[in-house]
Image (cartoon, rainbow, N blue to C red; front, side, top):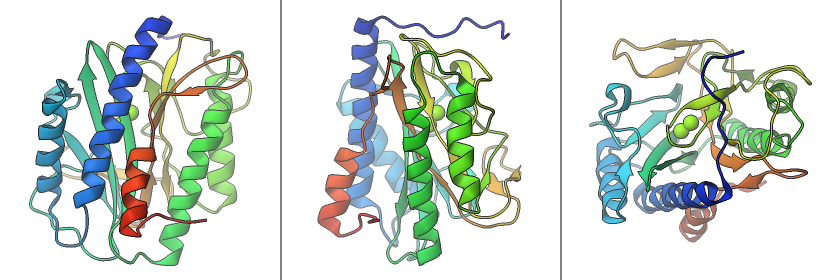
Length: 268
Ligand code: MG
Ligand code: MG
């Protein structure tokens, strides 16, 4: 057993956290409006920070563990923790955008993988399957289950689709701190791990590689890439554990309303 206390939030705290999670969704919708070929990751980072601060919140990542930015933007073979900068996105890229906010003492943390222009069909499939992995993980996040049930559901779907599940990075509890116990791996065994109960809020975030599961870190000390250089996708929601069905606190609906208007929504 870990030494850190497990997350237990009251319904009032969960309602406050949900506002933070929704602000992340709205921030990612601002990113969705602007993202496209020729846009730099640094520009997206600046607009996200401005939007968050305009809404009375602060970026959740910036300054944490020395993180220099509001967003972490991971392009193509980058799995997570890509640092925004001068890189211009190109037609055919995918970009996983991870965002956290802190508002009224509670964190929201959500991520979405965007398509830039025309993306190859096998890469679209990776995005679709990773989204499905997230849904399957959420479906397992119910009272009485264990973290291993979430990981099992995600791993089964990813591996049966021919993809690799990243082991080194995992989901987590979220609350008054961005990262709380328990860890929520995207792989696991049914009936193993930490028992889930109402009051726990989890960030479930499959990181799925088109090729091998292995990753490595770039010399910048942040960016994690797939070892074989193949693309990787990442979607993240915050969910409150409940009996029978998890309550999803974050949303992609603001993002997808924008993408629909732009004709960039991925379809089944
Ligand atoms: Mg995140
Ligand atoms: Mg997270």
